[in-house]
Length: 274
Image (cartoon, rainbow, N blue to C red; front, side, top):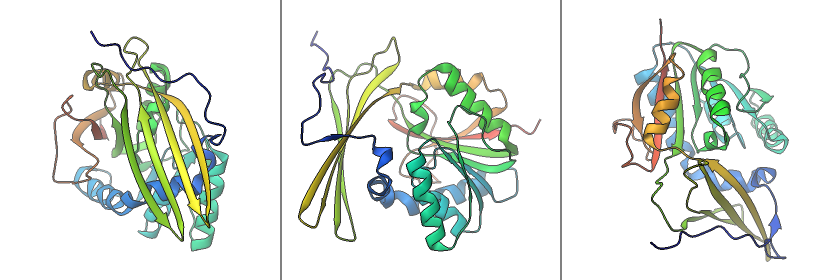
């Protein structure tokens, strides 16, 4: 049997800053911005199709740089965003102020109860859910969102499933430009530890601007899920029902069964009315 690839234990290169990418919200915002319109369109379509709670009250746990907070406010929604990162919240407040917009922003861990609702829609789309590394924390998050939703409200939750048979590194790579700044991002993952249900992840960011180059690197571990593991977790939150599974193409008309044939999943959970 081939030996599984292992994450490097050596420190980062001297020319690379070991810096949490949540401390550089502008770079983070540029990296994820290309999907913003597709995500916003999907959220509105999901609210119309799946929610049984008429209204425009939105909760975004782990709102990050605020690109979706701003987008939903611009579309007429009353938005509450939470995040643990002070840098991200500061960045979001500044962008809203610059745009002449308002939203409720709260410093909060995802495992804590969200600000009081009720909400018609909650969403967390880019695998941030997997930062919750224990069953207790993940369960607390799902239950907290369920409690905060109005009856019939929905939670759109996006994350990557794990293939426990993988024995090699995986790499995603993309680049974006904004106002003369070029940001290149690579996300590297190593084979998961099936027993501990953790997988090592590294983001590497290169920023080129005005002839200067900056490189940063963040290492962390994600909690892992295959489809059965997520279903078992969901059963512990009886107030939720799984109404549909989409993927990161954000096509509202493409609905799948939750299974291990998919890598990226976007589950739509609805709070039961009784």
